[in-house]
Structures are given as C-alpha cells and as structure tokens.
Length: 122
Image 1 (cartoon, rainbow, N blue to C red):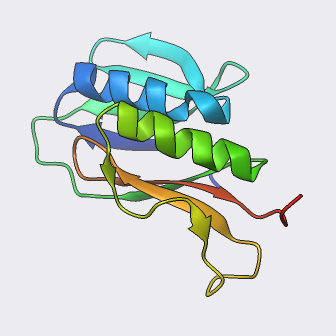
Image 2: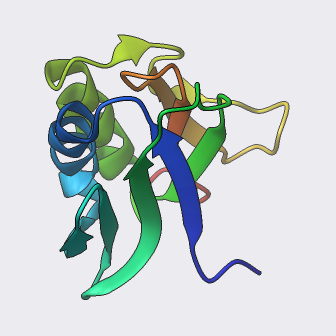
C-alpha cells in the first residue's frame, strides 16, 4: 500500500547512526541524503525518509519485513548495540498469527521499530 514513509526526528545525525546500524541486517541502507534528511531502503530505493524536525515528533510504530527469523534476531542485536532500548525481545507473537516472529526496539526518539518475519521456523 505505501510507497514510502517519512518521520521526523530530533537529531538527524543520531538517528542516521541508529537506523543505519539497526536496519543493516535487514538489507536496508542509505539510498539518498539531503540537507536535514535521508532516505533509507533496499536496492537504492528510499522507502523510509527521516527528516530533522524542530517540532516534537509524534511517536510511531514502524514494522520492517525480514525474510528470516535470523534477520529479526540480527536486527535486535544491531539496534540494541546502536543505542536502542528494548521494547520486546525476538520471539513469537502467536496472538497475531502462529508464525509471527518479531522484535521491537525504541529508537532515540522513542519510536517503536519492529522487525517481523511471517515465515514458519525452518
């Protein structure tokens, strides 16, 4: 449904370091960068735009797909190492569906960043 999503952050440099490190295990990298903003995505297409905002940004929940459960685990480890705060360790969330495997981390602005795999265990 969405082509891309944009969020405001309080410190673009801090958020850039966090998101690049946290999302690298999911195949997400820097696709574009401009003054006060950057676009992250896969294969050079920006899907997540991050822009510095003087307004206090509203907190969001962003879920990023992961093809494997191992990538969810790697996302969580990378996000925590990048300064994220735990909001739900990797594991099954069967109340969504039997194979919903996800991890949740709060970014520097308190946004809930999720990596989710919908595949059954190998």
